Image 1 (cartoon, protein in one colour):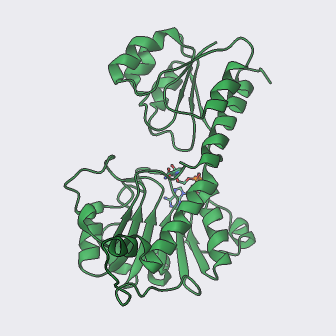
Image 2 (tube, helix red, strand yellow):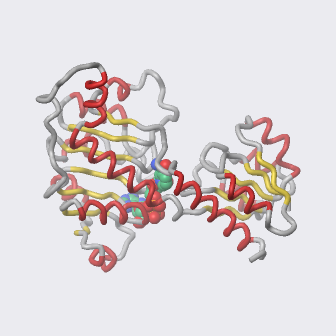
Length: 307
Ligand code: NAD
């Protein structure tokens, strides 16, 4: 089996792949679409993270492709119907980065509560703005979670440890699961909007969730609500969000993902102090990367019967 690793994965995992009997592994990251189309006919397995786009053209050029493996969650960079049509197996390693994303979410909530990112920039300019940086506590606040799967449930646990109560909207999970997590499950998003001090999104980007948070939804939220999106860009209408911040409705927002990545220089979000922005680093921790790599090796062994 000839394996091509198209996006960076940790070195130990590349060594782990090379140790699978009968596997030849090459790493070529940062290829253009044209370069990938040129080399893909030589390989049986493609390993990607989020950067490489496995388009219909790539799949059609991959005459010998049998498996496309995505390290991490979300397979929106792979044309799954095109792969299915050619009997190519597509799989991912969804659990590996959950803790990293959950911890980033908590970091963002704490940073918004205490304005850490803004206070840091101010203090480094030799200012001493104690009054400006009076913050608030997470204690006894309500977190509204939209999506309570792998990452949402880890966020719930951590917020409960801070003394927050958690209300969640997820029409696809069983009420028993929410009960076990000590989370109030609601089937009414408006209830969540009206109760939550913090709202955090942990859902996939689908037709149903595209622009799920826009002007009408912001209007239903508490004044001063704070919002986190470490899930997928496109779930929040960014123009409506910028307007809701300027109008004082939304007190803070922390985003790791955007409708366009990298964020375009003219995005209104870049100019607002209330926005805490990171460049899609939810899964980018030493431990998360190692876990993703280990899971890729295991999955490939399972899929090829080499276990
Ligand atoms: P998951 O599948 O375990 O959980 C998603 C949950 O969303 C499920 O419980 C599902 O029932 C629910 N859901 C689906 N549609 C919904 C809707 N319309 N309304 C409410 N709930 C809905 O996924 P996960 O591993 O927890 O990942 C959550 C998100 O985080 C995904 O979008 C994933 O791509 C993203 N993610 C981002 C990063 C990053 O780097 N920032 C890293 C990993 C994952």
